[in-house]
Length: 446
Image (cartoon, rainbow, N blue to C red; front, side, top):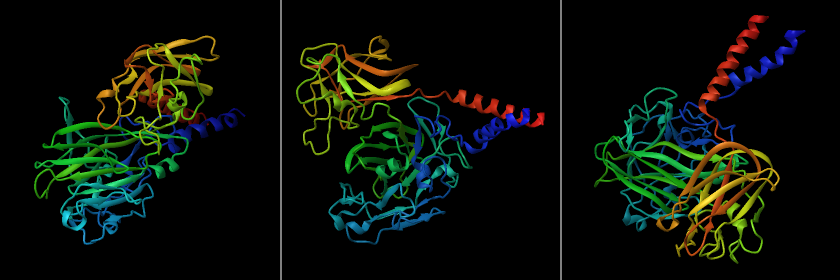
């Protein structure tokens, strides 16, 4: 009888040990948790972003999947639309392209299936495929360092390396369909794109990043050990993420860019579209800048179709301790909050400085979990940074934000995101180890 009672437990442990995939990335979190990193290199390799890809890469002039590096590709199509190639086998990839020569398209290159274009030209040729280094098919060791850190090999030969790379020799690009990624991962929000940018060629290379055809980031990299860490916020209304390798030197035959650990942060934002109320009904909202804007998923002060942008909250001028309360609907354990300040669109003279976060189960008793300072949004060039704050896990239904001081004329905020705590990797390892030992013990008991 006892064995029959224990068998369901053993089945559950077997599911944990066999049915659960533990990511090979050293700091990635399993996709079943509230916080996860979707790997775009894996998508290039034919996967779903969760370490399932096993092919080499994509031919940039046909959009076909390939298993070899391919040599030199020349774009023969002359039409503007014909130079952008759909990748029918990969639903999460919108398309690929080789940068057009100026004489053919006037310097414009199509970068999405809906016609987004950028003013960046090339010579119509590019070496090798857009490759997924994460499956070990690429034979290079790619050592990159950030600042004074010790160089890390982001693409060691062999299967299931500690890191991954999305690599491109110069003059080509790839566009990912963020809406397709959202549809494949329901109830989650894409927070940002992050990567370590580097090059493994002595000639160096340049990278460009665009969202919906709008420029977001660029850089020229010159040595095989140089790495630059970039993180770019992504709004729920944005659809296309374009990554480009561009030649740094004339001709650019051997120039190559590596997007190491190219991750989309795909998380369950507990605050998304939740009801928000002001701390004091009569005093905490500037007319026209509703507090409901702070949970609408729109970033950078912008609202689709709003022109000058209006998707942010402003407190009345001169008021401190203004704020709002987010109702999470049910009690949740939370441990991280992301905030994006406002700069009042292009005016750039408003925003929260010091702030306080408090939580409650009933809106009667409040506990302060965080007091800190936001950066001045005035200094933001192409986007306003999203700042992440972690604290000891706590149960809460209501989360209160209060602006204690402000930049310029008044306090405000563009967006608040609320997340469950990030599990410690060591905790997961210990749990699985204990489960394995218990499963063995139960089998021996038979």
